[in-house]
Amino acid sequence: MATADLERTPSASSQESDVVVLEWEGSDDPGDPLNWPLHRKWIVTAIPLFTTFTTLMNGTIITVAHEQINEEFGISDASFPHSYWPVTSWTIGGAFFSLLVLPVMEDFGIRRCFLGTYLIFLCFIIPQGLAQNFATLVITRFFCGGCVMILANTVASVIGNVWRDERERNMPVSLYILAYLSGSSIGPVIGAAILQYLSWRWISYLQLIWFGALFPIYYFLFRESRGAVILTQRARHLRAKGQNVYAREELNKQPSHQMLLASIKRPLQLLCTESVIFVSTLWSAFTVGTLYLFTQTVEQVFSGLYGWNAVQAGYVQAAIVVGQCLGWTTCFYSAKLYFDSARRNTEIPGAPIPEARLYTAVAGGILGIAGGMFTYAWTSYPNIPWVAPAVGLAMVGAGSVTVVCGIADYVVDAYSYWAGSAVATVALGENVFSAFLPLAAQSMYNTLHFQWASTLLALISLALAFAPVLVLIWGKEIRARSPFMRQSMLEKRQEIEALPSSTEKEGAGDGNVRV
Image 1 (cartoon, rainbow, N blue to C red):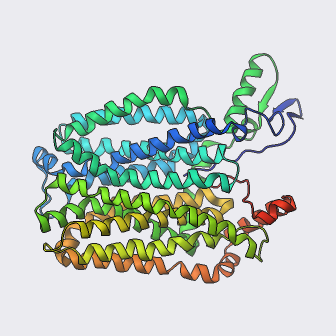
Image 2 (spheres, helix red, strand yellow):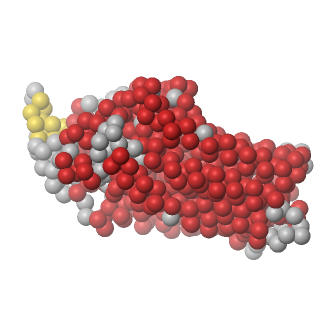
Image 3 (cartoon, rainbow, N blue to C red):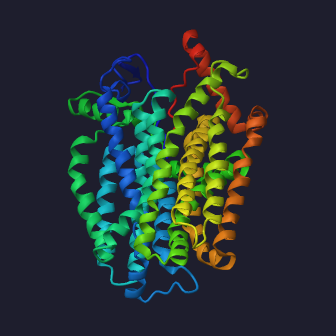
């Protein structure tokens, strides 16, 4: 995910040397994305949200076609799931592009990057459908995965640019988490529907038709929402008329190579020095990796128990999506607990307590993911109806949204000053686990058998869910020991003190971009 901060002052412009620095024409400037009408905000938010959901399907939609792909290209899964390499390359591409490309692309504007990346994504779908060898499929999907992660990160930038505070952002952020997870989970379902009637190549052809048809809609409706870019465009227009006007972003622009080094260094620094970030990354990464692992184990389990084929096993993964939609509703209760915690905050009175974001996440990890895995494990018998393990899948789906949403919100609040780097660290872990955890599924389920393999995953999930309990108990002390969190809390204190007293009493969120 990405963050976008914009300095906002009441004056329309200010004089620095011989250069006029262009700023917003008052706090109610209609060109400022924060002042846009509500319908325009939702349009510019809904487009990348929908794109996130539809393009995330691209990562897993091909998994149900492994038998046809193996037969055509002479690939064998007898000893190792080689057919998963196209998904592994896709997720590695996502990790690579998110870490190295996204930070330097924001300077070009969100709209331009979104549309340009979308076109590149379309171009790399074409050789997937026309691939004459397995290597072509693996390589082209690497670039598709990179493009999809850039498109998905667009949501984070848009939310931070157009929604003013935490309360306004709560709904868009929760929808983003739902779109991100359910898009990956519904991929095998869509792939199964296509594969039931057409060959595996039509999975790519139909995606090309679908995504291509959406491009004109995006082109005409998706507007630039990065305030610094809008001001830069205004300044260029005035310079064309002979005025010596510049946007502050143009004058203070950081060299791209410095931005690139910072985007790589700080997430790795947080991962290696901050135990909270390490545990949060491990928990979220394992949760997302489990969803990708299901693309391998569901067919293995349901074909072994009930004799189902790949298409039928693809359809049953819709249970995960149903669970994710149900789990999304807990995000509203989580937000209520979070904002209510401001009343009992003695450290920074009036500010919500960051650890309050984890209440529902811990419950979702224990009851949803671990409980669902235990259900999935011990209902995996041929004499038990298939609905029973499907219920376990739905429970894991519900828990996954609760956990990932809670972790994302928590690291953003606890590390608000470094929110972009904190979220990038978690996202990097999610991509790595999604790439490699499913590669162990076949061997694990063959060696331990269905019941104990899923039980092992349940026990790991249970341990990860209990780890944040320490943060809930000693959150204040942990934050005091972390230089990153101390700085974030200092910023939070200054923002709360600057608010009117009536706002403090309501426990209103701050105005920083923290997605």
